[in-house]
Image 1 (spheres, one colour):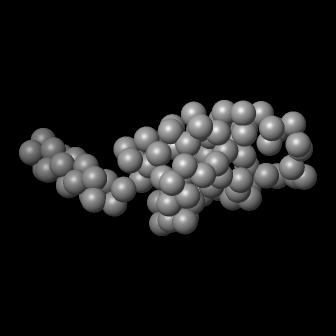
Image 2: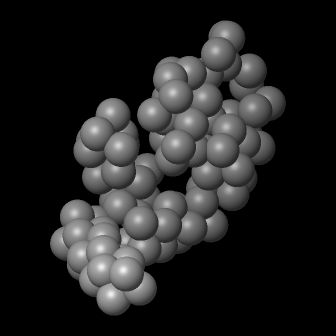
Length: 90
């Protein structure tokens, strides 16, 4: 999506745990409480503590997700492959 923040993808790829505002594009990247937090109200210390206790695992998972879904070249290759498949089905 053109609305996805490249800076969030970069941060995730570097192992940062994202704390994001409640925007639709951010919800494409982060499931609040699982791989970051979507802040729709005041940050609760218990929520942050629970997330930080899993920070290493979240960092590994986020890096892997960006590697699989967030890099431009592989995404374009998958798009071109899919277009070729669709054309061959015609």
